[in-house]
Amino acid sequence: MDFIKIRNDLLGKTLVENFNKRFFESYYCSTKEEAKDKALSLIKEGSSVSFGGSMSLSQCGLLDAVKSGNFTVYDRNLAKTPEEREEIMRKAFIADTFLMSANAVSQEGELVNIDGLGNRVSALCFGPKQIIVIVGLNKVAPDLDSAIVRARNVASPINTQRFNLDTPCTKKGACYDCKASDCICAQIVITRICRPKGRIKVIFCGEDLGF
Image 1 (cartoon, rainbow, N blue to C red):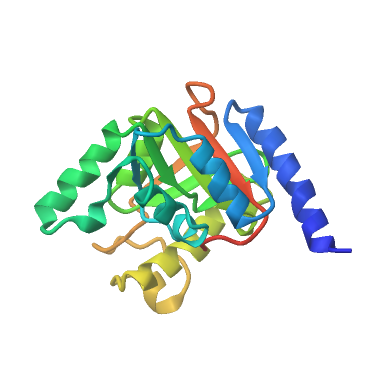
Image 2: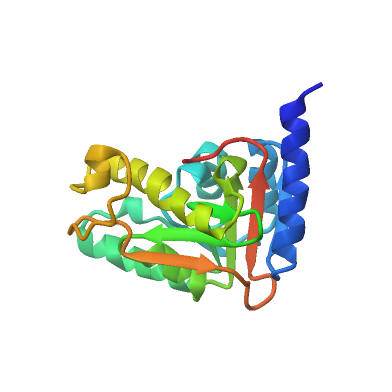
């Protein structure tokens, strides 16, 4: 028997129940492929889509599927100048759907996200009509406090290393609550209730995604 799958499927069911109690619209998919297909089923053909920087979206194939699909895509990575990049990032706020992952989630039903510029978390809080969050079970923490610790001590150092930023966590691998100019922990957002009901769709995946 695949005891890891059994455990993950049970945890996935628990997460869906707990997030739905907080008015998120939640789903559990055993595989990356299923998570990608579920996300696509929630996006209306011909609608506009944007996304934050996310390894999870790439790893499950959702970004490629959206870019090759029948959607208007606002992709900041196609910008030729810093000014154009900022303009595309602002268009994310008027997109029909914004795609992202989370830095951590609590088993109790809360999302934890950390941002440098704040474009991703501000879209999450208010703007696009629909938010779709894809989360691997590797990002699940038992409670809110441990979810924040995970976001700051696991996700943030890896992201600063990925972007080669000049922060203590880049050099030492853990959070030092810094005030560096490159700090990506400028905005820490806890989403504990979804308002309006169902605007934020959370798709939990039974495989590891992102970090």
